[in-house]
Image (cartoon, rainbow, N blue to C red; front, side, top):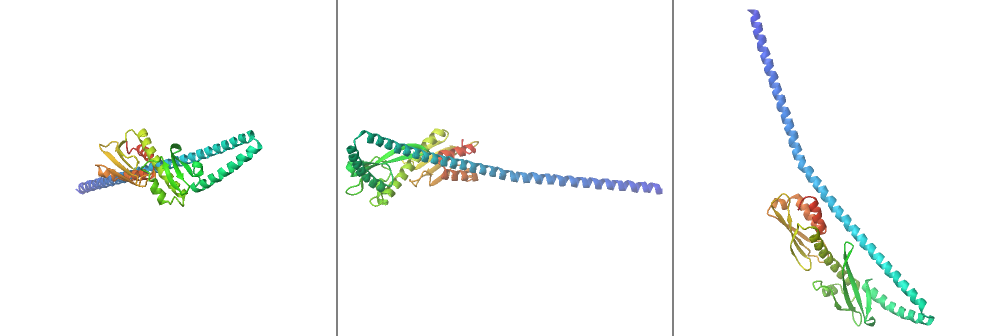
Length: 309
């Protein structure tokens, strides 16, 4: 009887131990599952941040590449101008040497006296206009100033301006487009007193116009998928239509060049049916890119990042 009771108690204790082990195993499994879920949730939270950081770094790289190209173009333009000036100076010196060898001593003296008088007049005009290319006209009573335009090392249009020096300084005629405020710039910079300031302002407006016009030309050549919805003669307003990859929507982009002395826009505005798209961080970066970079280069960067087709 005693042995039977002892076996009974032993079996009960074994049952309790088995149930305790099962409970402990279940708890361990639940804790392991919770830990795994926590790791997965943390991974999902960090993944978008990492992707956003990668996109941000790519945008910075593209912007730096654009700045590098701009600096290289400016350096190339400067070097070309220096070579052109050196070539012209050498040519003038060679021509003078040949002339001096061919004439007699008396003719040399007469030529030198005439040249001296001419150079004095040209130096006076050169000083007035601040170093721009000038040709003397009407026996020294006026000058013709040439204003060349260039963009990214490419020479574009050249404009001419005839200025009377006597009896007063005034513009007689020019071939500058009518939408460039020549007379307004002359009054604003007091051409009578400071010819250099007037020509600097005029050259800045002409080069800015040439730059905007060239950007539009390059945009049409390099980005066939971008539709130009609107532009004007001054290239001071530009409306573009972008197609967004993997989305049934388009973005309308307006670039406003209010400051006509600059090649870059003063305002950029996006319109899109998908408000979340235009308000996203990535499109805010695209906004900054278009504000700080020539439009054709900004579109190349946006296409490389996969934001437009």
